[in-house]
Structure formats: C-alpha cells, structure tokens
Length: 198
Image (cartoon, rainbow, N blue to C red; front, side, top):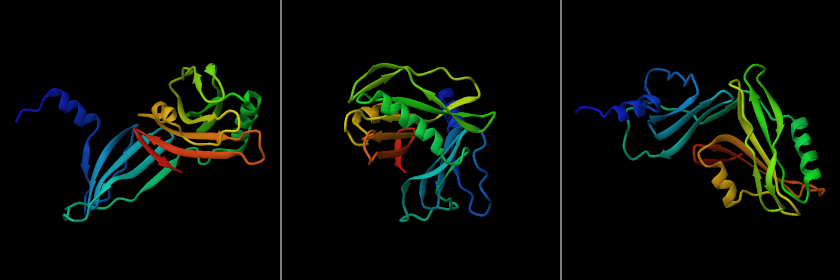
C-alpha cells in the first residue's frame, strides 16, 4: 500500500506511539502532541514550552494489549501561578466591574516566568467580553487566560467560553463575584478540545 503524502505528513507531525513494555518511554521533547497506545488504552501526550501533560483519553482492559504502562501527569514549567499575578488581575477586574475583564499570563521562555498582560476590550458588558488578542514574540507563549464575570455572576464556564477555548492549549481561569467577600473561581486546563477541571 502506498501512503498518501498527506497521511505521511499527519503521521509524522502527530504520531501514535506504541508504549514499550520493557523499555522506558522517552518523553515528547519539542512542542507538539502525540497519542500513546498503552496497556490500558489510548493516551494523549502534549508538550508546550510551559506544559507537559500525559492524559488518558479512553481506557480498556478487556483485550490484553502487548504494550507498557504510562502514568497520568501534568507539569507546569512555571510551577504555580503567583498570588501577585492573581491579585493584579482582581484589581483590574474590580475596576472594570460591573463589566467583564480579561488578561493573559504569558510564559516567557527566556526567564521561565509568567508575565501579566491586560487585554484590550473591543466589546464588553456584564455578561460578555470580546478582546483583542495581543501579538506575541517568538519566546512568548499564552499559558493562562483570565477573565472575570460582571455584576454578581459567579464563576463558571459558559458555552461561549467553551467555544473560545476550543482547540487551544492553556489554563483558563474565571473569577466571579469580584467585588464581594466571597470571590468565586473556576479553573480548567484546555487541551485541544479537552476541558480538564483543576
């Protein structure tokens, strides 16, 4: 069988790797993703400059697979999101209240730190937000997408959020009730259409 050149490109860019049973699997090195056929099902491995994720997509144990095992894991190159960056966003969100507010935390490869970038609002209100996506330099990468809910709306991910986050790889954090004593928070990791609660 002759492989269509388009299939050859797809399989090179996004391969499926059989996890060896008796040899340690080398982790994905550069930015990209691949699928892992393991003893207990199909896994997804994703690497970005700021992220390394291994996540099970579907499990099965009915058929014995001649492959090795992998462990679910998530590693952030920046460690934890600092309280200072969160407080800076909450300050901006409270200033924008009762309208919504947005910001990005950019991972800088040179410093391996997150940098705060407030987003320019194109259109906003207490229940919607349209922002201008800022250009990034080659060593800058979107890692965390922050936005607030306006009014007294609690934090949750709306269908519009699902649409905005579809296909991206980033942490997404929503803050609600930003002027109250009980600020609410919803957090998830968005990975190529997967929404993984954190």
